[in-house]
Structures are given as structure tokens and as C-alpha cells.
Amino acid sequence: MTSTAAATARILADSGIQRVFGLPGGEVLVLMEELRRVGVDFVLMRHEANAGLAAAVYGKLRRQPGVVLTTLGPGAANLMLPMSNAYLDLEPLLAISAQIPDDFPASHTHQLLPLHETYRPIARYVEKITGANVCEVVPRALASCMERPFGVSYLTLSAREALKPADSGPPRTGAAPHAPRADARAAAAALVKSLALANRPLVVIGLGIDAVNAPRIRRWLTEWNLPVAVTPKVKGIVDETARNFVGVAGGMAADGVLCDAIAAADLVVGFGLDPVEVDKTWHAERPIHWVLESPNAGGIVPPGTELVDHAALTDALLEHAPRRSWDAPFKEFQDRRAHMLTDRTAAGRTMWPGDIVEALASVMPAETIVTTDVGSHKYLFGQYWPSREPETFWMSNGLSGMAYGLSAAIGAKLARPDVPVLAAVGDGGFSMNAQELETAERVGAPFVTVVLEDGSYSLIKLSQAGKKLPSYRTEFGPIDTVKMAEACGVQALRTTNPDELASAAKRAVVERRSLVIAVPVDDADYVRMF
Ligand SMILES: Cc1ncc(C[n+]2csc(CCOP(=O)(O)OP(=O)(O)O)c2C)c(N)n1
Image 1 (spheres, helix red, strand yellow):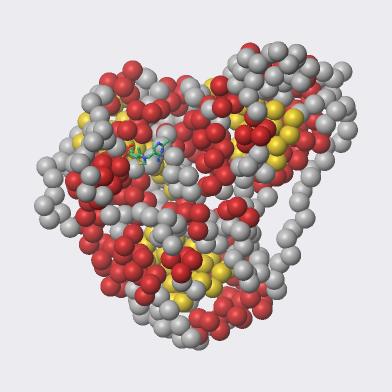
Image 2 (cartoon, protein in one colour; image 1 turned 90 degrees about the vertical axis):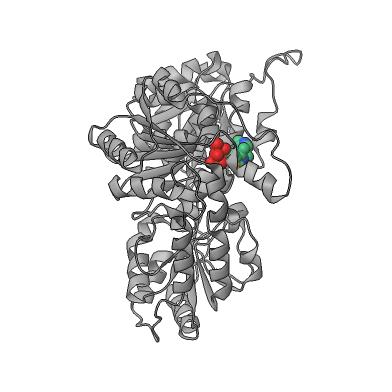
């Protein structure tokens, strides 16, 4: 007899899932044991939210759903953050939790929550695993996560059901039919025609892009010498050190410059552009030539837009020669953007934030995966980290939830063990989940963490000032970052010198070990960048 837990584990293993992230309770121990038996590693983390965030990054990098497993009640409740993040940041996440068995008496209310009802609005597939349906619902949940745009599935399995015999049956994939697609050649011809009329075209690439298409899109942009901006979560899809790169549009530092650039464009091509990342309204006000191959977050397709296969479209575009040439039409905006990083007029006494980015970028290899937490430092790195390769920059942006940076770094390092990983986090976010540094050490996922220490939730403090409110309860007392890291078994140092920052980071990468570098910053320095 195969138990329902064993069948669940077998289906996950047969689907290529090698790791499940989570934090257990008594109700999931049988499933955990079955996972162990089929060779699926359980990545034990110190908070379910962190486990879910790490799982989704791990999964997306491996082109499969990330899987997080929690207990019922409080463990399941802690899934709200990562499931919301995966929902709004379009990351593939299968969340599995325990639940009170259906046949418990109605008087049993301890830890009973309406979990399916709670998560149904953000999970596209919600189901209870039973012995009768396990061979159908687990494959279907996995497949649903991978339907573009990626998203969330949620399954519950009670401890009692886990032990019941599973009906055998060939797993059904439950793959969704493809949405109808426009003719790629016709779509290419229409875009070529629009571009022929444009004096200042700007291609804005967004989260609806598949990284596998990066080489052909880069080739088209280069051959046509087209100005290009990206939204934060696809940083690296184009080489940000290239001449035609205009900047990162979507609420990062220098956003005013990017908004001005978009306003100055006479043609905006939204290549996989998903407004879920944009905290302004230009996407609704500007006419946009949409080039989408899957719906945007929330299943939205702008009226009149036909979906088109990006690979076929770009191949068709490459058959056309540009009908005109553009000579850096956004140079003024590119110069303004660059100036904001280097203009130290009235800089504070601590390390200039721009120097932190430059020092690290000068030593970290191009393939380094950078993760950020949420706050002023995200705006800084999101705009100015010079991403050079696809899938090398990870932030929470659709949701913008703190506690992402370290969790994402763990998921990224486990998915790409040969690539250096750098987490840039604020001292507020760091204190939310620094304990995961111990997880990283224990599971063999070393990375470099830079903690920008300003003693405040600076983005919120700056927002208070912007609203002419007094600074109130946005500053906190010091927790020694170095001691905190050391308490988790990770070496750490504090520096005020960019050269020392660069050489320490480089040494840690060469020696393949974790290092935490605390860098005091003055939050006032951010002001002129935003
Ligand atoms: C979970 C969560 N809680 C609150 C917020 C609101 N918030 C956005 S940025 C920020 C400040 C973060 O402070 P810190 O991590 O020190 O980064 P800094 O802004 O100083 O760079 C806060 C509280 C959020 N985005 N996510």
C-alpha cells in the first residue's frame, strides 16, 4: 500500500523537485519522512515566511515550482507573506500545509483556520490532498504554478489523510491549453512600422519576459541600436553597462528621471511590461505598444492587445533592417541618472551610498546574483547595480515585502551553487530575519551580505519628511550587526572605507564563504537620489 503522503512525495520527486523548504510541525512529519525516503531534501529554515520566499527564488531559477511545506494553523498563517510575494512578483510557488482533518469533531477548534478561503484569492489552484485525488491534484498544482505568468498553488494535507492509502493512477499533468497567439510576423511588421515613425522610441522590458529569450532580444536591441529601460525584477535581461541602456523604470532611485524619459519618448514599447512593478501611473496614461506573450499580473491583458510568442516575434524582427537610426536620443536622461549617483554635494560623513555600489560592482563577477531587501537600499541597488546577465537580480517589488533579501539569497545560492551571491539589506530588514544566516551556513549556501546601517527605517523616515511630518518612531536603537552575524556563525566586519569593503567582499567570494559587512550610512544621503 502506498500512503497518500508517500504518493505526494513520489510525485514531487518524479517532477524533479529536489528540495522542499519549510519549518515543521507534528502534522507534517509523515510527509517529511516520505520526502526524505524519495531523496527530496528538506531545507529547514527559521520562519515559514523566509522558507516560502527562498523556495520561490530557488524554483524560478530552476524553472520549476519552489515548494514550501508548513504545519497547520500558525505555520500555514505564516505563508501569507511568501504567497503574496509570489502572487504579485510572479514567482512559481507551491505551498503545502497541514490542516485539521475533516472528520475531527466540530468542537475541535484549536488551530483551525479557514485556510482555503484565506488563500484562494491569491492562489490560482487550491485543493485538499486526499488518498482519492493525490495523483491528480499534486501534478495539477505543480503545473498551475508554471503557467505564465507564474503564480501560486496551495495544497493542504491533514496528518490523518497522509496515512491513508492513495488511489493509484497515472499522474495527470493538468497542463493548461495555450492562450491563442497572434501571428508573429504580422506583429513584427506592425512594430517595425511604428518604430519607423518614432524619433525617440523607448523599449521598456518587464516581468512578462522569459529569460530564455534574453539573447535574441539583446541582439535585436543592439542591431537596431534601440534605447531600452527595464523594470526592476528583470534587471540583467539587457546589459546595463551598454550604451543604449537608459535605466530602471519602476519606483527605484532616480525615478523622476526615468518618468521624464518615458514622458519624452514618442513611442513606448512595453516588451513584457507588467505594471505590477510600477508605482506610478505612466503605464495607464501613455499610449504603449504592448508586446506581451502572457497576461500581466492578475490575468490582465490591456484592451486590444493580442498575445504573441516573444521568441518568434524577435526572430521575425531580426529579419527586418531598421528603417531609421537613432543616435542616443535619451542621452540627457542617461547623464542625469548617472550624475545622481556621483553627485556628493553636501554628502554626510559616512560612506556615500554610491561608493558602496561602485566598490562592490568593481569586484563581484558579472554573473553574481544580487538580492536586496526593501527600503532605501533597494532603490539604490535597484537603479544603480550594473546588472549584466539575466536572472542575476532579485528583489520583492510587486509586493515590496521586507525580509526578502536574505531569504532570496539562500534560495538563489542553493539553485546556483557555483555563482557568487550578494545580499544588500537595510539594518531594519536585517533584524527581521538575520537568524537565517545560520540556515545559510547549515545548508551550505554561503553568500556575502552587506548591511547598510542607518539606524532607521529610512525609506519611511524620508517619506515622513517628504510629507512634512516630524520624524516619529521610524528610528530604532542599535543592534550590533557584527555580533549578530557572529552569533549565527558567520564572520563579519564593519567598515567605513570603500576599498576595504571591496577587498573583503572579493576575498569572501574567492574563499567561497559567508561574510557580513556592516557599512554605516547617513540616510540623508539618499534624499537627492529619490
Ligand atoms: C513586511 C514589511 N513591513 C513594512 C514595510 C514598509 N517599509 C518599506 S521600506 C521600510 C524600511 C526598511 O528599513 P531598512 O530595512 O532599514 O532599509 P532602509 O530603508 O533603511 O534602507 C519599511 C518599514 C514593508 N515594505 N514590508
